[in-house]
Length: 155
Image 1 (tube, one colour):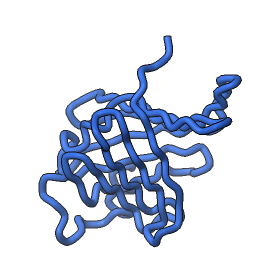
Image 2 (cartoon, one colour):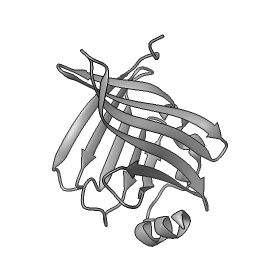
Image 3 (cartoon, helix red, strand yellow):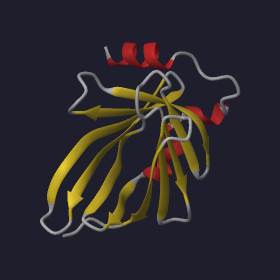
């Protein structure tokens, strides 16, 4: 069912898509625990590779003073049919939301689903080994940005 949803929403590969963007290895640099520390809230994404074709993740907002998790979503990167999909499982959505890897390089990855209301585009850019910038947008300049730093999980 999920595969049918992904193929129906994302369609065929975009013209000009880099052929090297069809493997999970192309986005393996996303693995780790990434934290965007802002006053009153921390946004955290954690990614781990669980198989040759899957990375699992979690994204959440945490109140640093109490450790209270305010919003969370389950994330997955899946390689199938020579394409990579970012799949978000959000409590407020009945179905998971897939984004197709549309562009990539050794330090960036752009996932898109132009049929979704918001976001439609997730652009990840690695800046050195320990800094990750994420642009979450509607594909037309509206949205927000996150600046993550790689951090080990607290003990």
